[in-house]
Amino acid sequence: MPFTLPLGSAAPDFRLPATDGKTYALGDFKDAKVLVVFFTCNHCPYVIGSDEVTRKTADAFASKGVCFVGINSNSKHTYADDDFPHMVARMQNLKFPWTYLYDESQDVARAYGALRTPHFYVFDQARRLQYTGRGVDSPRNAANVTVNDLDRVLGEITSGKPVSVALTNPIGCNVKWDGQDAHWMPGDACDLVPAVKK
Image (cartoon, rainbow, N blue to C red; front, side, top):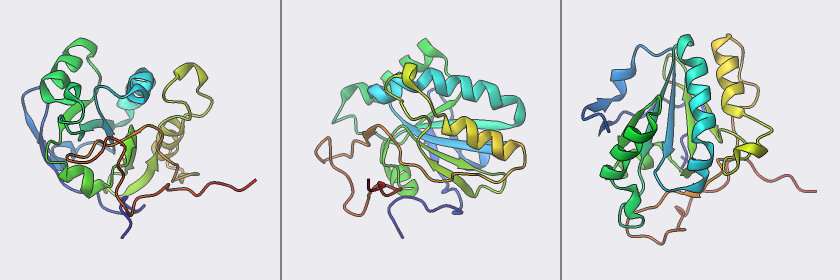
């Protein structure tokens, strides 16, 4: 099995603390018609640059039964700003329309095969993976966004259409793995979509 969760896979379960003081498992979101799980953090410029675009998408599809869950798996030993107190403060300040979970052990990141921040996984009502990859083509600078893959995918799924492009390369900083160099990637991880040779 590749490091990243293959398309069609069942969503791995989790049980993680959230910034709202509660603990959530996958089953707590069973009423959602579509579940977007995305790996994010507090400090990454690609996350900060695209969070408002993600907010608009989450708001736009909430009435269609789409639920968003953000997971921070970054090691606090690599970036202190990625610890849980900073997560709580960020949510209190910005009030994002998603549940924000802390994966301190990084076990959930390994189960999903999270590569970068942000990295999106879109699951249908049966919790089978329908899309994985980037949210937009320019997450660091929202002013330069020309393609919004997350909007497209959610529009297709909620309209009963097949997903036209189900796999893209996530764009962002790599997940900060505990005990590893800040730029370390798992040995069997690679780009999801091979580069097109010119």
